[in-house]
Amino acid sequence: MKILNVGVIGYSGNIFKDPIKSLTPMCDEIGQLIAKNGWLLINGGRDGIMQLVSKSANNHGGKVIGILPWEQEGNNYLDISLKTGLDLNMRSFLMLKNVDIVISIGGEIGTAIEILGAYSYKKPVLLMRNSGGWTDRITNVLIEDKFLDNRKLVEIKQVFSIEMLEELLKKVEAEVKNNWSE
Image (cartoon, rainbow, N blue to C red; front, side, top):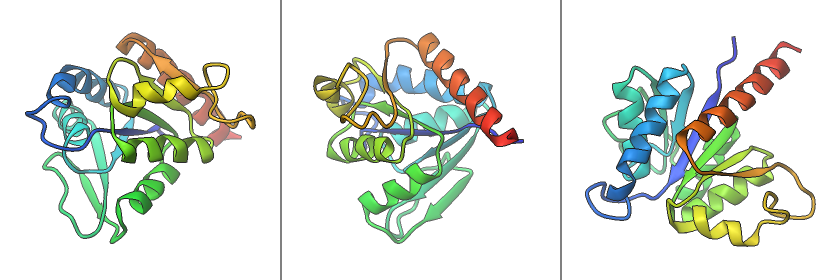
């Protein structure tokens, strides 16, 4: 049976410094949500948001895959570490090809590239609003508040609560399971 592969992107860096530190409660809720529903968490496997969500999912019994750049070691909360030998951007595109949906939390230019990549691959993107960085900034360029260009490849949704996130993820899960059974 197909399970939902959830990609999480966002700030990298020290989890004890802001802006990452202030997002710890949000990351904990997201990791717990993913684990509770039996979904697979896939991320870049490093520090920052990736580490916080991985830790939470792992601590709540979830499964976590980290798709790592170069020959880097992943954080301590990964069930599977895939060393790609690729640079950060190319690794991100490999990750995006293997997820059903992307959750974005804050982030710098790497996160912006991942949002654009997900959109180009027609992967739904859920923007965790008020998390800062490109997750909030990119909303300024959305067409009709949900598309990145006039082709309208896939909707980008702005998420304002963990309850809203869960509802949207469950809708995508139902679509994925329906498409898988056809």
